[in-house]
Image (tube, rainbow, N blue to C red; front, side, top):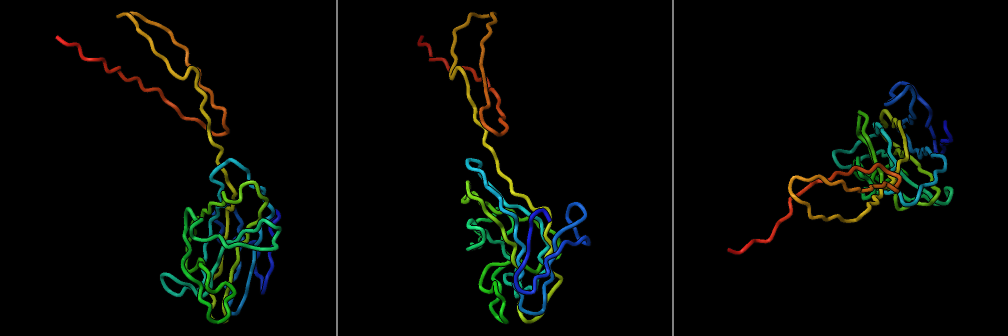
Length: 219
């Protein structure tokens, strides 16, 4: 729904309602005990410029056949395209701000994502955050791709709460840029300091008053 599509070999991606993270529904694909290449594709998203970082975030349960603590037989990967799906690039560990891949997917038994880093072997929801700022200003699509081999399967891949998020930086404009004064004891003066936020984000600021360090007076 919402412009998402799926396809590939033995595609089983569908909306389900038995294990949602937020709300009532989520996407689910079966981890089959035969070779499959199942692809869930987002609608096109135009990423803004000048708003770093830009992130692709989602929650998921990659209950895909594990091969131990640092590898998997069946795996899920994240990919991105900027040419309407003509070519896809894997989103690697170096782009992930939260939730690194489980390990290398085995190439045995015909897994189509064999040899790539993949998620697998999990039973509870986990958050994944990928920094895609490299594609700022581009119109992109994201693809969640499940590859299974010709052997054992598992419960499958649940995906929910997918968002693309960017941060607009704040920009402080202070006038005047500096102040100084000599003031007699026991007097009050009023000074005007104008602070403007000309950026798109929230600006937090404070003023700390520190006593001036006066030069020593020789006897």
